[in-house]
Length: 171
Image 1 (cartoon, helix red, strand yellow):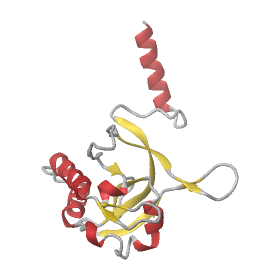
Image 2 (cartoon, rainbow, N blue to C red):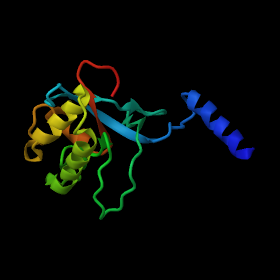
Image 3 (tube, helix red, strand yellow):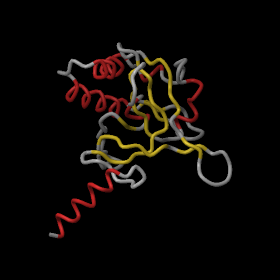
């Protein structure tokens, strides 16, 4: 009886957009940017998804979005998330304040392998775009990439990145 009531409550909360409840298999993540990709996986531009913080100032903060459930990581464990992760996994680079750019090949390789395993057999334009991006992206040229250069400092401050297929709705 109690379980049934809790299940019904969960269903009602899912229908309320402001409840903060994610559907099964999803979790909330703070997202900063979407990589807008062509059908071949070319990075066309970066879509800023940040929101203005409530209260004083005009500071921009990450947007909470439902994304495929995120894995739990320790600092020593390399484990990519599906469709949404930080710049170390998605772009293969990190840069801490005042430090040089650091390539993180193992993180990027894990991201690529995860997406190849899940999307590799799909005949879908979005899947092909993501796989095309991950197979041709070169982390060594990330910092000087013309699409990333205008937002580089913001990208390196943190927040997650997601993918978007150009010309389609949603992410």
